[in-house]
Length: 401
Ligand code: UDP
Image 1 (cartoon, rainbow, N blue to C red):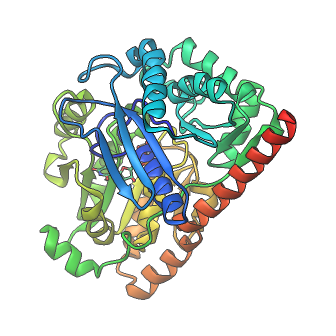
Image 2: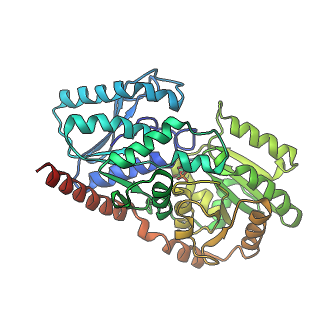
Image 3: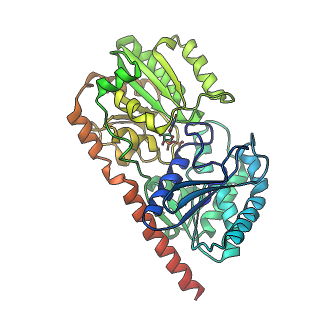
C-alpha cells in the first residue's frame, strides 16, 4: 500500500492525518491477520520516525525519505514522488520482496504507484479518499489545484480498479472525471467494533468532568470543509433555549489556523463558556467522548466517507449530519439520528434541539443504534477487499496472457 503524504501511524486529528490513516492502518492489519503480507510505504515526516513500524501480524509501515523530513506542504511532495518511488524500489530490491498488487491511497500516492506498476508489471488499485473536483465544488476552504484534478482524472482512467467508499463517490467519479463505470467498485469503510463500544453515559460524563448539560460532540480535523463554524453558530440558537455544551475534539495544535479562527468565533458569538476545545486525542479515549454525548454532529460541507459517523453509532450515539459521505446510507432517520438538508445554523440547531429533548433514552437505545453498524466491521471490509484484489489480479493476468 502507498500512503505517501499521511502516515498511518501519525497523530490522528492533526492537519493531514485523519480518516485515511485510520483506514490504511485498520485494513492493513486485518489483511495481515488473514495471512496476507502488507507493506505500507509512507514518507518519513520527521527525524524521529522509526523506519519500520509493525502494525500486527504480516503488516508493517515503512518510512522512506523523499524531500525534507519536516514541515513540507502536501503539494510540495509532488516534486519528490519520483524519489519516493525510486527509494521504494531500492528497498524492495534490498529486501528481495515481490509484490502482487499495489493499493494506493490519495492522488499523490496514486501518481507514485503509476511508476511502480510499470516497473513491476502488477495491477494497481487506487482509492482517492477525497476528490479535488468535489472539494472545489463546495467553494469552501483552500482551492485544490488543477494539477491534482488532472492526475485524479488520469488515474481513474488508467488504474486497474478504483475503490469508491460510497455510491455518491462513484457518481462523482463518473460525473466529474468521466470515469469508466466498470472500473469502479464500491466498498465502504469500516469501524473498529472492539474499540468503539458504548460506555454508560453517566459514567463517561463523570470521567470527563462534564456536568448535567446536554452534550453535543464534534470529532475531526479542523478544516473549513468540516463546517465547525456553522455548528458554533447553531450553538447560539440552542443556548437560548437549552442548557447545552459543545465539545470539540480534534486538531488544535500550533500552526492550525482553523483552530484559532474557531476559538475567536466562539468568543465573538459570546458562547465561549459553553464550548470546550479538547484538542487532539487518541482513538482509545474517543469511546468515552462519544458515549458521553447526546448527539454527535457532522456539519460538513464535504466528506468522502466520514469514519466519525460509524464510530459514534458504534458507541450508541445518534448523529445530526449533513448529506455527505456515508451519512444517508448509515443514518436511520428518527432512530439513529437526523440528516439535515444543509449545515445552516437554523437546521442544525433544530435537529440537535429535537435530539436533546429526547436524550437519556438509555442503554437499550445505545445497543440498538450500535446494531445498525455492526456490518461495518473491518473483518467484513477486508473480506470484500480481498475479493476485489483477487478479481483485479485475475483480470490483469488474463490480459497479460
Ligand atoms: N480522530 C482521532 N483523534 C482526534 C480527532 C480525530 O483519533 O482528536 C480520528 C477519528 O477517530 C476518525 C478520524 O480521526 O477515525 C477522522 O476520520 P473521518 O473519516 O471522520 O474524517 P477525515 O479525517 O477523513 O476528514
